[in-house]
Image (cartoon, rainbow, N blue to C red; front, top):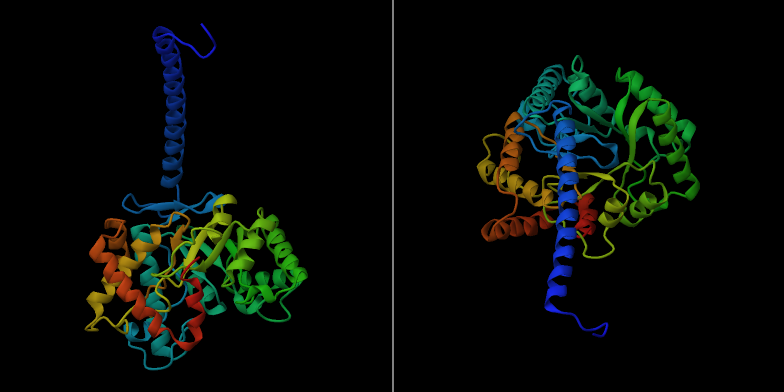
Length: 372
């Protein structure tokens, strides 16, 4: 018999050996998967403000398990909810006594509801937001992970582009907010981050790395609207860039090739998605509780969150929530079927088209994030 000839008996014998080997390998893989699953489940139960009905996702190499929807810092449109008489900025608390009192009660109540349902991370990206959420969490700091960026003291502005200045700004901010540390310090460079020189980028990285080693933050990352730049920085500094914040809207999709998410997956980076509702351009109403569009806008919000979470590279979208009702609405989205059916997809596509036409002049750049 030549090397190419084989009897049926030999064939069956060899096949049995191969099958046994495959079964054994499959069994090992299943056992490893089960062990990992058990470890993850145990870690999830230990996360901050754990709730059995909440979905949690791993925030990349940080190893933190955060809720599938987190609390963004902005409070746009809150004026209607708190019945403010004076001006209320998107990132600055109101100053009028009555407005300020109602504002801080609203923020405390929304944070409380988040904690109650298992939402366990808040992101603050300005001095006003940091001071507000540090106040709302006073006495219960360990209930939520605190993502921190005092952008006014970061490289968007000259004078804050050296490691020494950045670390001084972090020290000042933590002191003023009465925070011993932040869980994530994510520096916010220029919105067009590629304008920064390599030397300035090195200073940012040095500041982040130093702050983590000094215990001022537990984890580090960057926020950027500049996709090509962010992809390069992730690849160049994988030990320091543990989390990134980038836009990902109700109409965003991952590019089939050369996507930012290729670098995210390769380097195990956590992703918090900003602007999920495109600065509220997704909605027809004004956010007020008695808006005639309130019910339809609630549905659009749920559809958007479900769409975004279909991308496994996104750890969590972080919408700014201005009421307990909005918290509960997004909690409902997590309990709905993840994949959109044909009718739901058509509805979200229509809403997405309208969203782009409603974008304010200052947010036209978001169109660059339709494909990520």
